[in-house]
Amino acid sequence: MSHSVSASASHSLDDIVSLTRSVRSTTSEKIVEIQKITGSLRMLALNALIEAARAGDQGRGFSVVAAEVREISGAVGLIAERLSVELAERIEALETMTLSMTRQAAGQRLVDLALNAVEIMDRNLYERTCDVRWWATDAAMVEALADPTPERAAHACRRLGVILGAYTVYLDLWLCDTEGRVIAGGRPDRFPVVGQSVRQEPWFTRAMQLASGDDFTVADIAVCGPLGGAQVATYATAVRENAAMHGRPLGVLGIHFDWEPQARTICQGVRLSEDEARRSRVMLVDSRRRIIASSDGEGVLTATLPFETGGRSQGFVTTPDGMTTAFHLTPGYETYQGLGWYGVIQQKA
Image 1 (cartoon, rainbow, N blue to C red):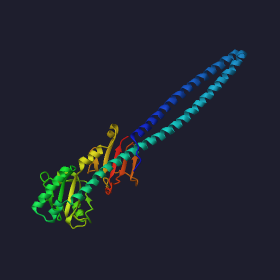
Image 2 (image 1 turned 90 degrees about the vertical axis):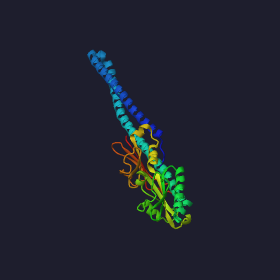
Image 3 (image 1 turned 135 degrees about the horizontal axis):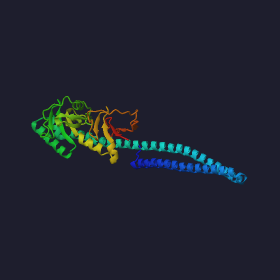
Image 4 (image 1 turned 45 degrees about the vertical axis):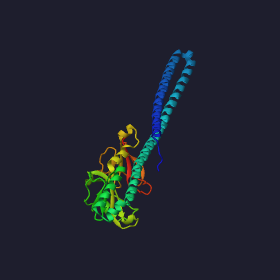
């Protein structure tokens, strides 16, 4: 996991930059004052020399003093000039170094926040993989497919409804036979899907081909027409004979995670200050760089986000106009390896 850099650390570096600029300004002002004083001394020395010359032999001693004053003022002026150049160079170097540290700290913080966003979603989806494999072994599901009757299908519907009552992150749960026909749903009044076919759905096809009850499949985030056009993440696995790990597939259980509100909450919940939030866009991007969630709701499922990773799993890039794009590849969670998604944060200067 990447090293965490707090917002306060970034703010402290900003303070150093401000202090450095203040020192530059103060130094320039004081050197100008010194140069003004030495200029006045030189002028006084010149006037004294003129008056000493007019006084002849009586002013000869005074002319020696005036010459020394002029020499000293010239030396002080030269020192002030060199000091101005050397301090300006060193202050500029310090300012450049501090600005670089500030940008690095701010960029790394955004990387950490991008990781946090994709990690929260991964943990959420890990639970979905557990749910689908568990519920596929429910006796009501197995019996409705092993010996299909209207009564067993109705019982499976009621059982799915009970599950949905406790798990509010799902839109619906579908039990399908080997032909891809939905024989039971958890919300038949809201979503009348019983009798419809999902045979052409990739999640159904892949679920029927899984090797064991410990396996699952997941579809890309998509809009689901039968569920009112909602955005869903569908997880599926085979329901097997006798609920055995390697039993013969009797059908498929598909569970439809209510994607949009959950993903939006995660993106909008990233810990940014009010100022940062106004300048930032938090996104989840799939393996094809398609935007699947965004804090501003723009381009979800319709736009891609091209960004260069340079072969890295995490990092950030800043364009000449000051736009920083921070990213972090999903690390997965527990046995869930993730789907190659990225957490991404774009922030204007």
